[in-house]
Length: 247
Image: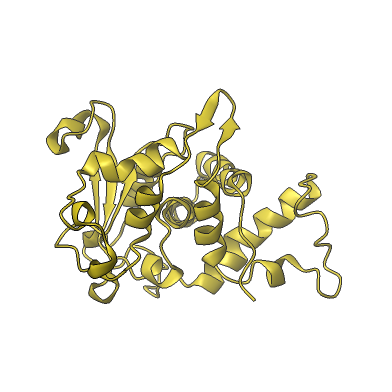
């Protein structure tokens, strides 16, 4: 049975909590962990990447283009991006480029660029793995879920979240059992972009079928594609629109 899907409000709650913790703590170790957790939270939600892809990233696999430098990649001024290059075995067959492009700042205010710089500021090994403990060991899905995601979901439940209310810890109704995999991010975000919605004054834009296919890095036989799709080359701005406008 697949993991339940997170909702936008769950991920945003995690983001807000981590942001508050980052601002309040004076401990280097805690600030470093919180910065990495904030980055992972948005990589998983905006990038639709799997836990293994996320926690195997090295600093060399991540590139940040500042919003002021957007025109370098034919982006509008004020639109930056963060690029992720995944392991070779996860790459699509569509060329030598960054596999995942994320808007530096989404229209509704999720800022992966901010978390990138926070994590970079506490980086001890700029040529090493991105998500690692001070001792050097890599983060895992289990560590992230039990240290950051589950505690936040429990707090959200106690704060009155209607969707999480039934998961009171009784037999068969544990949060840990319902969201047993970080695939809850990928499923949740894929569902999120398929519908319109609001966050404050911002209205999410429904993603197109082609945007979903491109962003998800799904493979399909080229013989099944229309001729215009086979020869299509998406610009960075085309590829970043799904995270810019649908989140």
